[in-house]
Length: 143
Figure 1: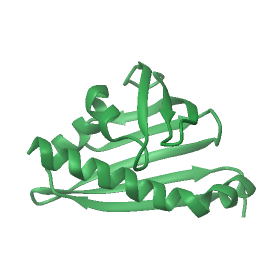
Figure 2: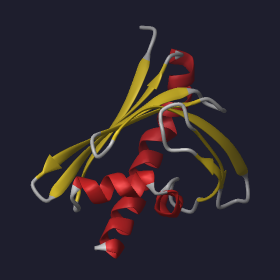
Figure 3: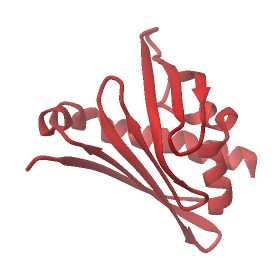
């Protein structure tokens, strides 16, 4: 197999307009993006196809992780696709689906290199769950 996908899904207690805004508004996104204990400093956020998102993730131990992603596709309230081009390279796809007054979020990280995927798979699934825990908490606060 030439590829590897890491998939995370979550039903969030908010309509998809609010969930999508938590991704598309950099002030909101900076509040929850990253695993538990991490913070992010955004340097650029051009939310459009071809746009670039640059930020530094700050770990609880003081380690910094520079990140750069390029937006590939944005369909408001339905889909966001970006290529993460720094550090571990992957394509992230987020699909937002109505579930009544809730939203099903389907998040796929596609790695082209199976060795790289195998290296990060041990911690990425748990980190993604922590990310979504933080998103869910933001959505509850904003309700």
